[in-house]
Length: 145
Length: 141
Image (cartoon, rainbow over all chains, first blue to last red; front, side):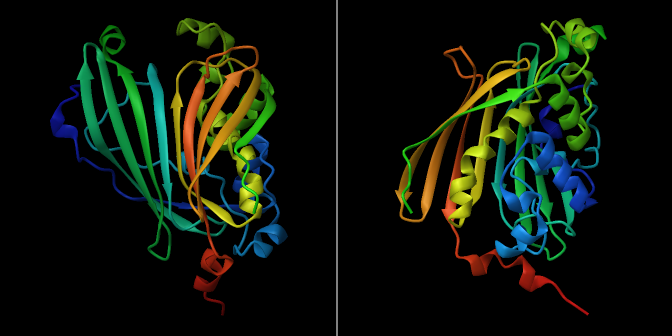
């Protein structure tokens, strides 16, 4: 695929994720996290949350729909940097709508530096997070493949 | 609250079993994180840790702040080197630019190596409990 500046600003259709309590618990447990409101409903309520909450790296798992015109290679993508800004906490029972867009695109030799920005909005129309992922794509291996 | 100048070091053992569990929990089933032959076919020395797993582990350092009412507002990671299953050393240094705000500089080292494999930053803000407030937005029948 041709990585041109025209792709900047393109975005996906919204995709809604229902945040499941067990999925949150399994995610925190898989990392080995220890803050009780991630796994224990009672602790979450005591801390002022409506149910167990998502840890800070969780929003990355909320995949967006594909961005029209973007054909990501199946392999050879390096995740260079990751950034999150947080708004409303994500709790079990929330419905989070995610939209991804091409925020920046730079080319250097065979490499494409792609910044994908994903915004998550909850069922109360509050922004829950803004994620920015810097992906490094080696286009020379793509041509071979 | 007494704000420490440094966080950690916390040593975490990341095993291949944990990579499989993280793959399932995160939905990232890229085989370079659990299948040695696939990883080697991409020129890697063996399976490597998900970058997002190493980033997520830093949360262990923030727990004392969460318990004092701080909330994370910003989190950033730079994945500098591939990391194989190993003992990871997590650490941070804390700056306090304002009375209710903390800035943490983060590092994750493979045990025994001097250069950090992952570096990052986080910002935490002291939040009055009432403004956690998502409970108030719930409509109960």
